[in-house]
Length: 201
Image 1 (cartoon, one colour):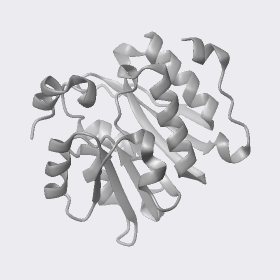
Image 2: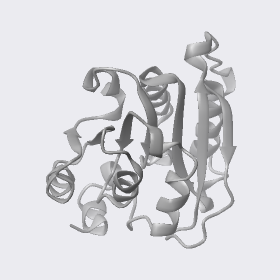
Image 3: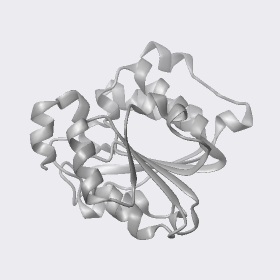
Image 4: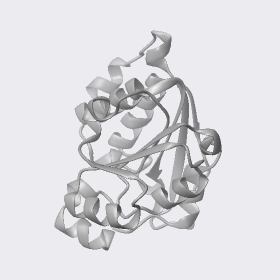
């Protein structure tokens, strides 16, 4: 199934006009500790480019759930990755979909297509799902970096994680993108720092 076809069918659900590249998948899954993870969640797996990299890195004993809102993509993912628990659902309800905290969350969600309220809801769901030493990774397209939704997301991310890093641009992707890696969810430290400027954006 083509991600381009799904973009034109449901642009707000899909968010990307082309599938992510192998180079971006490598950047997204590097240095996450997947090799020793016990539980991993992927949000917005699309056609499974990141999913394949995650499966290749995980130990056999790890639990891996992929949450996708597009029912056509859910069916394709279940056929392509029978060992993965593919759940049809929305990222905001992540806590109700999982039985326990997870070690890693990998997200392919289209953050700049979300209104401020949904950005906050999804990030809160991710923080609430991760263990105290959990890690979160996501990406953004380089050409959107200075748009208000992208800047708002960066502020919200830093308000919800004590450690946030941004990689160099991955040029071998269409469009070029960079990766955010975040750790130490602030909700576990009793220090959710939602900035007033973020709410006003």
